[in-house]
Length: 238
Length: 58
Image (cartoon, rainbow over all chains, first blue to last red; front, side):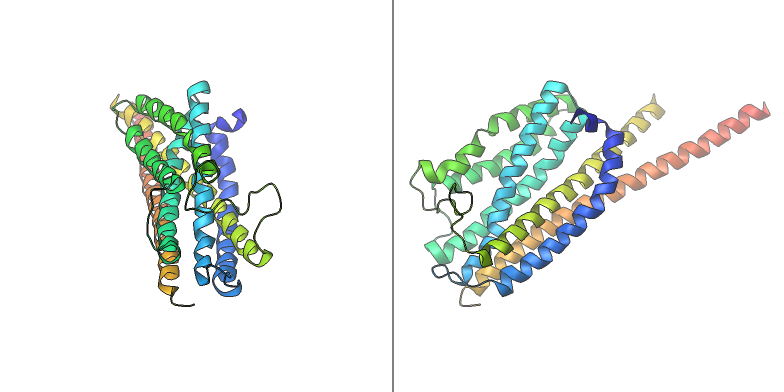
């Protein structure tokens, strides 16, 4: 892992990986959307609104996955001082915030016809809202200091403290009595979902994951270029 | 789609808007940064050539 903490090696690898991840993401989205919207059956309880799940559930998974990555990158930055880990964490925050926003918006759009309300202050919904604020807080804190190193350290500490919220989100439906339904897929026994619905769900989830990797690469490369520009300008002025 | 079609299309539309905006903004920033760096490298190279010529002439 430490081998890839070198910016030059990362750029070389990223250039090779990016065309593949972005093309496969597009293919997964195309097939996932087709099967999700046109080919999969309506649910016997939720009716057609089940189709919202094909974007809501992958976005929710990705919001948690992105935060876990951000916390791991922050830990790596604090322990080993890898600048690339800091760049990764900085790049992950807006992507995670976007996924969490998608989760909250699509959740509300599913909740209105199914529960008769856009929002309830139950444990799952509230903890996801906290996750959204954690992402926003990270983005504000990382740019709040004149010294970027200080901003990175403060934001990394926030990311690590906020990681407590991840298991709370995951197990909130088991620990508390919530309006939100319990997990259907990540159960220890067989998933409580038919293959005709599971296929578009997994395709969309793969599409979201590949989209995350692609955007992450683009954002990390942008920050690396901006750092090079800053270094060149400093050299000129000095 | 049944009577809930508007909720479904709004959900897909909102997702598309958010993800496409994220993608477009990331690519836009990357393009700008890359262009700035290319210009700096080009200027450095030209400056280097001039300095080399002055040194050679003197």
